[in-house]
Image 1 (cartoon, rainbow over the protein chains, first blue to last red):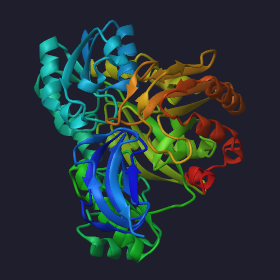
Image 2 (image 1 turned 45 degrees about the vertical axis):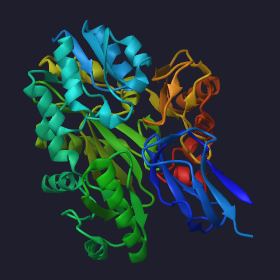
Image 3 (image 1 turned 30 degrees about the vertical axis):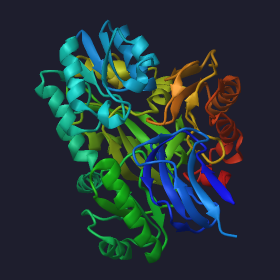
Image 4 (image 1 turned 135 degrees about the horizontal axis):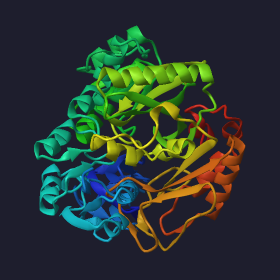
Length: 74
Length: 444
């Protein structure tokens, strides 16, 4: 099952800590966003395989944008 | 008096400076990033110059572009507001080297207190009480652990060049300090371009109380009372009031004397703030802010002084516009910072403002950076507006604050207005017995 990690606010992308093909644990930080002088870590809410990363460092996201897709390990 | 002024800032503080400048007959020049082309401060000013892209480094921190804007428009003076380049001694010097008037303290004064470690050492040397803490920048976690052994836990880790609460972490033991040190150093390098770190004793039940000082053109330094700033989230102030419920006349007299001495020791000119911690009826020096403070309206409401006009007059070498020997504080004032953030977890909430209705009436002042139709972007801090209220006593001010918060309507970005209402209704706030941990206690 594919699980989407979504931005819940408009922000700039400061750091991307995972790439496609990485196995992540639930709670592992995928990306650090920056908005209004605050760093906002975006964590995986499920364990699994990262099948796509939709953001790049220096880019920006809008509310609802997909940050990463995780294939959930059954 | 000079007749034109460039304001090197944005949002509510740029508008605030424009208002006082205009009242003194000074032509105003705004600068703006691409993201702020239609912003209120641009509309308010007599003239506006685009200085670069939306990122602060490309615009409001772009000293070269700002000085070029001053040259193009013939501005004679520069007011930096707060944040951005306001406490950058290199910028202050560059403004003066360009033949312009810098509306603020000298580059030397800014440099003397800009670094938290040297500021602490300076205050200790002139007999102002300070907390136990490191007297040199800490090079690595090992040095931090050694310093903490001497100081005693809990300690607070800070970026020496820091501001706005960024990078501050509390550590209760060696393990926590090791982690905190590395995290703070990373942020210090990234946000302030300076990895200098200090640790200081942390006082869990202290209050943040600051003294407003003003260095006059004739070299005198006066203190204009205190502001209580203990309502903070992420070490950033949310609600401020004056007078402080924790400061009696005797303590106030000692704090104001120390603040004047601090200012005199560095030949301070213009508006500045001496931040202190107050605990058990005593105080220690925390840091000095060499600029106009966000929460200056609280002081203006109780003293009747226009601090920005005083800054402008002093920069021109003139009298401050009031009698420094006859300053009287009257009544009670509270400032409530309206932030674009969710009121539970305080996470940023950019967006387009669909509705904006400000409260108005006797004893109510709104300093707003935005209005209906404006977009709040992720590029700048979340301050939308400052709602300040005055009453003849504290209870009256709190009641007025509650009415004003209820009447302030903002739709679009989430705002902390519901949180501000919670603070004003909170038992500890109402009794006045709160400390800097109030918000943590409310959200525990």
